[in-house]
Length: 569
Image (cartoon, rainbow, N blue to C red; front, side, top):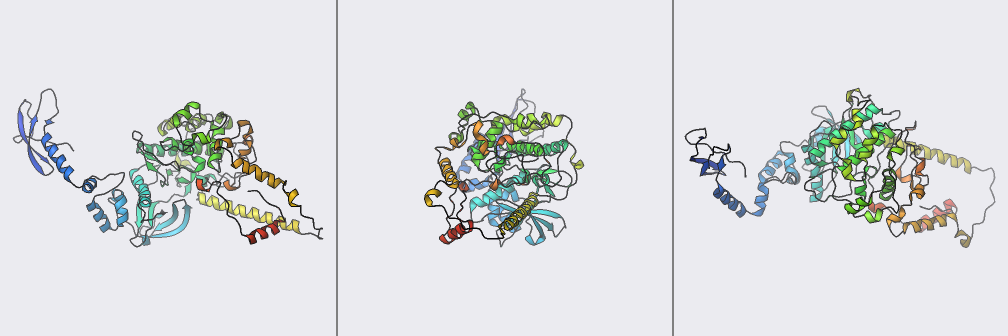
């Protein structure tokens, strides 16, 4: 109940004496005579209205449960009162949207879809597509994010509405600002309107000829950590920090975007959250181990990966599966201590615990980095999330207080528009050209001046010991290990799971050769083009999934084409 104010009937000033006067107090449409006592030793007016409070509480308890719940809207769940929903529906908002996120729609009027003109598709994700568009009314270039959801599924609508609620709560220079919503009564589509940003950090870093200097890296990281500090202070976890979600305009301003996986959190009253968040290459170890009770450390780990990636010129831990990602983390950051395993109580701790401990080697691996950056990287990439501290502490680190200082955003070079999708297109085109050149070379080799003698096919008995069969049995044995922890080889034998980070930086996680040792890694910036995309969100259902069998005709065609040769998947 709110504060109740009283005034004297005869005067607007409360007397200094110890006398009791009758005051007229208005409380919930009722006038009551309340005795007020003023003492000399205190400047506080004590209002004795216990009887009134009891009567109002009893009246509140007599109300139906649904009415009581609606009378007190919960900003987190956004259940607006019925009269507010009626006003919003009359203003043009769909009823299903007002029922879920009515609090976030307060004060807004929906825009119609025909008031925007799409220009180009500039991004795509698991749950949305992003388009460059023109506002027909103002001529302004904007970004339209089309959210995928089913308005007949309440959970799907709540998932979409949560992003709107979070964006309305945030207000910072380094966080993208929601400018409006576009909806339609006839369709279930919903567009979020944002300011158009010419670049994202992933596409910019992948642009040919772009190499960030130390002051530029400090400028971008300072803006990233400032935006995270604001989010965390407002009780928001982003849960998907990566280069493609960090947008940059032509003035050098960086803004954190894509809050589709973001969530509210309260460090004092934690509640279980899903561990299936954060893109694999930037996912912290506690999420890979199945943690459901976490906090700001998940965003700080991703920020540490971004910092090391900007200085190295390529992703530092590009794993293909969750098991391989944990392996790369252990090799670089060391395996957790025994105390951590005991206190964490993580669901997958026994499955993914390595047989032998790994030594932390961040300083040795990144020895070419600026010395002032190493303490910050060590902190952000701590295995124990409690040791990653906060974004505020990171902003006060030595990295930002020593020369060369971070440059001003306005002094950053002006680049042509570049986004992660542009980098993917360049990679796809380069891959097609390489495949065409390889096919052309094979056709040249197949041209013969004379036919060779037909060779006899080996008998099935002799075919049993072919290298392909040996490799196949070896893979089956490996896949049928007793536990996933046995798939981690000892530190001196783990080269087979490494990845040649010192090689060409244009690669696809689906075609990474698994037989080059991690010891060959070199994190010095080479002259080759940098890595161009951030890595997929791996679906656990897709890992080790059985391959679809081909029909008999397809098998005969394949055998005839490859003349008896077989490849091991």
